[in-house]
Every structure is written in C-alpha cells, then in structure tokens.
Amino acid sequence: MSGNLIKKTGHLLLTGIVISAGFWHTPGKAQTTASPNQLNAFVEALRVSAPPNRPNDGMYSQWQVLPGIIPSWTKQCVGQQMSAAQFEADSAAARRTVSCIMERELNKNLAATGNNDTAAVRRTACWWMTGTVDGCSSGATATYVQNVLNAYQQQLSRNQS
Image 1 (cartoon, rainbow, N blue to C red):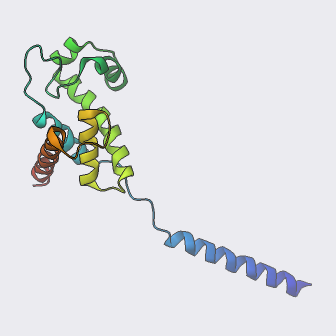
Image 2 (image 1 turned 135 degrees about the horizontal axis):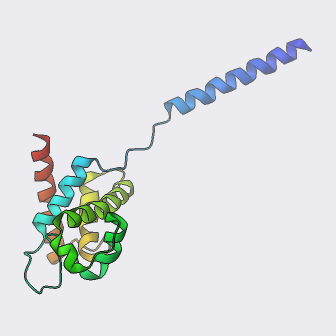
Image 3 (image 1 turned 60 degrees about the vertical axis):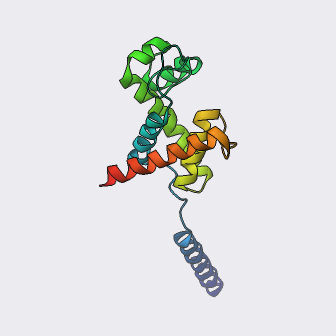
C-alpha cells in the first residue's frame, strides 16, 4: 500500500513539475500599453498635423477638436465639463484631454495590432480623423494619416536623442 502511495505522490510531483515548466516557458502577452514617449509623440503628431486653426471653422484648440465631444471628454479627462470656448482658451486642459483620449485609443490599437507601433499609429490617426480605424487608405484621409505617422516618427526620434 505504501508503494502505491509513493508512486502516486511521485506521479503527482512529476505532473506538477511538468505543468510548472510549461507555464514558465509560455511566452507572456506582448505589452500593449503606449509608453509615455509614444503617447507624447503621438499627441504632438496630431497637433502638428491638424489643419490650421481658423476663426469660425467649427473646431477648437490646436488639435482641432469638434465641439460636440468636448464636454464629455473634458469631464472624463480633466474632471470638469468644459465648453468649447473654455477648451479653446485652456491649452493645458486641451492637451490633457487629447492625451487622455489618445492613450485609450492608442492602447486599444496597440493591442489590436499585436503591438505594431506603425499600424497602431495609423489606425488611431484614422480614428481621430473619421471615427473609425479603417477606411483611411486613399485620398485626403490617407494623406493625413501618413502625415501623422511621419510626424510621430520624427517626434520619437527627437525624444530618443
């Protein structure tokens, strides 16, 4: 009887070691969170790629945000609902708001692309312009997305120097 117990114990021990070794060798999930450097580069890329701020163009701040989304985004990101005029007048709140929303969207797209930085930036820039992550492969939207990607890559290289 004690021989069977030793066999069972040995078998369980061996099974535990094999399972543990399997977990040890299982690759971890790829990091899908934008670094602060990536996020800052992307937010700045959106700013420099935005159309020029023109009076009465219907968009606000250096990032050219449409007014309808400003109250909910500012409430979520800066803790208080702001009007479009308040958002326009407070560049720090505008940057915090855009950074907050872009962190969420860039992280989603990093996860969706298996942490492919270029693809995530393209998808997020497309979302920023159109509200969807695809459909920016031709015309003005493709040009805009490429401009954002180029500016992003320039910002990253500056920040890493």
